[in-house]
Length: 635
Image (spheres, rainbow, N blue to C red):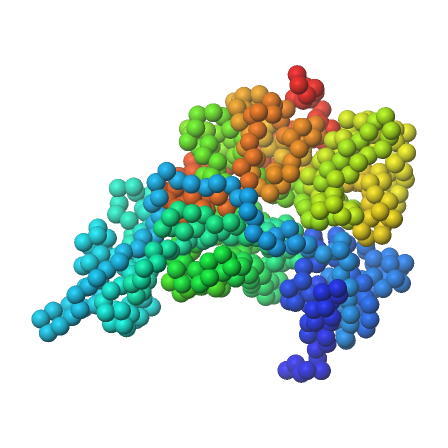
């Protein structure tokens, strides 16, 4: 049995958060329990070096090694995933090692407008004025409610035991004037069948006609939530935060591996549900007490995120033949998986297509609406696990491209997420051989985010500082120099940078970007050619996700990430996953359409598709080995 002596107090700076940690627990795990995010791309395996912290006082058990030199060790630097608690300690988390959530700390006021032609939510409310029972009429309470609902066209309704237990007291306390909430699950496979209906709640009647649904986008990096008034169809501003799982790895494979550890799955589920619960608390600022009137939540995430949130082991997602435990989810109770909603609140996960094309893509396609149109469309969600869909109203094909973390700052020496201090824009003056940086929030630069990486490499490529092979032309700029990792380009000197270090772009960084953009482009090309078409046949390219918002289209085409098409063919739709959940909440037919989209999609496993690897190898240049695919801009 552990005693108080077996625990040590760790104080994390500059937050001044104190955590009691058992002997032998890693600093990374202790910080995570304290609600602090430390970057750990590798999931704590000690092979990325991004969780560097500084020991300001006390002791931890640690040794020099990979990513921690003797010199760094002497400076009291430690890898949080390898340093183990052994006594009281003060640990400083530097900016470059922090999971900066400041971008998400306020509601996003510029949400995309989400509306439906006809407001038809699956959750409906009925105000009932019932005749109280007497000696002449001793009809059971539930039969009395059911008869009144039948008069409003709501028949054959199921009621669970929890609702049945509270109903008699509610009816009598309200003088048999009740507001009854009903959920109608439309038949997904048989449109002619009758909807499955259930009485979700029986509450006293009041004059407030508002009732709500939740839309949840469960992303690998961030989680978004939006409250929807089902009485008016109004979608309120969304709120967001970093997914608490990021300290266990930045990609789904790292998270699946971590889930296989003792208590790993439980920890990951707790992290994401805690993130959701924090967002629900923030929604109270918009509508105080809304949870008592929120009856359903629609959630979309990639296949792994859905399973982790539900607490279902995702291990078979990464093992051949790559079979997810669940593709079409049953309706759950939100509280059943740890979400702080009323016991009656339901939860519906969007269906997945395959192990790596998840409900977030189905939701995004729903939001885009291209599945109803004739024009040939390429739908892209750029990220660590980049997903693509090609098709129109007649057919849809899809695939997942293992792009890696470069687009989110991973695998880049000074890579970081889009947050204050991230270099996100770059202009190179060829005449003066100097550049101008754009930095988020106009503060000293700390690193470079994914969109900034694309902009820097595209500008340097056009200026001839970077060649087609992704190597520096060492005589083209005085800012190209030889560094500890080979040739590098100085973006910001130490005196002008937030971390007191030179911020540089290395050839290794460029290699990682080329691999990432190559995975995406070869995926588009493979799907297009698989259906007998060419890239030039694409009439529309839809870009979804937070990354696309800051994407410079010309620069993305310049490096070979996007197909070389007229710019007017490109459309950005924002957070398509959240928008699709919102549509499903507003309209039962939209929820049915989402399930139709899932069935329409033909999934391609790119690694097993003939010719894919040849196409991928051809992309490992800037922009491509086939010059005909990328004529000069404007041609």
